[in-house]
Image (cartoon, rainbow, N blue to C red; front, side):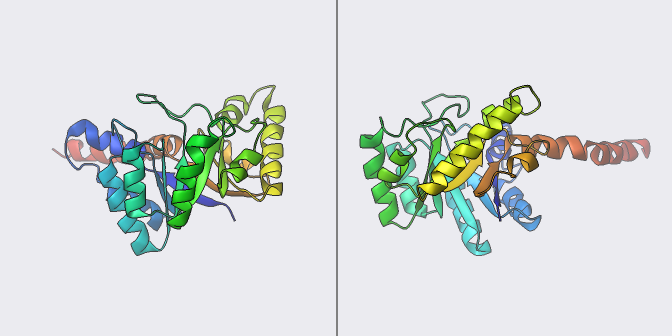
Length: 242
């Protein structure tokens, strides 16, 4: 069964925009778990413009209490690794983000970056932290992920989402199917994430062997879109009664 990990970054971004603890990141994460999510994902970036390192600590405690997995994503900078090693989440997904990057938009060149990745993964493995590497579905050197010690890869799914309803949709999905099959044959677990949503997720999960999807941006927007009728109706009722 595929596990759903909810990425809380957008909730943290909303909180940071007001300078106080509203919305409450921990409370939102707890509600997601109450409603059926299997785990929580956080991706703190160097400038901590949304998820903060303190959030990682707090949500690690929540996930321990709930007996679910915390997945912490990010570039393996010293500050990031200090937090990960301190809280020891179930999974750490290493992502090749550069400082100031708006969002993740490509996977690792694992073969080329092996000198950076191998010692980091070895240290995480020693601490019992499962390590996943963010990769492009058409990356030709998936075996390098196993060689540097990763247990899983996370397929970067924006190309799938971009072409989902287009002429290249079937061909693009086939690239992901083949990537998942290649990874599985190498003994790598397969996760996926980026721009998956209510419209395209089910079709993507027809691909065998997807262990986990992490979804944040689309999920939060869909919560707003599908909840707007109820919320606006209630506001209108309140003001109409005055």
